Amino acid sequence: SQQGEEDPQALSIQEGENATMNCSYKTSINNLQWYRQNSGRGLVHLILIRSNEREKHSGRLRVTLDTSKKSSSLLITASRAADTASYFCAFFTGTASKLTFGTGTRLQVTL
Amino acid sequence: DVKVTQSSRYLVKRTGEKVFLECVQDMDHENMFWYRQDPGLGLRLIYFSYDVKMKEKGDIPEGYSVSREKKERFSLILESASTNQTSMYLCASSFLDWSSYNSPLHFGNGTRLTVT
Image 1 (cartoon, rainbow over the protein chains, first blue to last red):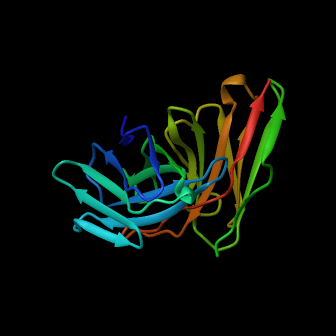
Image 2: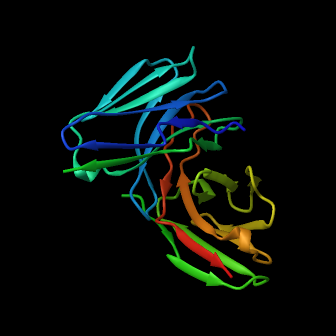
């Protein structure tokens, strides 16, 4: 399967702590995207990192990409209860229109 | 803001019924997608379309068909519903970006289909 693998599958932290989730993939990519999904809802795009970038920031989000290891990580700093959600990495395989998703990390942030 | 609207949040159908899932987007996006999401399997692409009347198979097209007669509307059809098609179905849309592959997907809130 060309699907991405994410770990951990589930992560539970306290508010204020940092959360790190990792994504590994098998193919060459042009960019890698991260999405968030609140329970019972659709996915929301968070951030995109291009294959020639190594690190990108957006607010409390920091994404890294290591194309030699075919892996990416998403760091959420100073987490809040509202960050509780599932997080997915995604990348294009084959055609420009076909986005493949990782298996997701379920993040639980407790007060 | 882009809005992708799926016609039903919850749907219960019987085995063998023909089921239509409708999706409408309001941002003039060329691309539209249907995914299904199952616990432990993540999101899997069923079909996608990059233009009116055009369709491409995704990773799991068996048992499904699609229709795109208008740019804003993409329908997923289960010709004869089976219990293994019980799932969350997510529709998404995006701009067509052949040069940089950088267009994010915009998702609807999903349709949770139960086939009994």
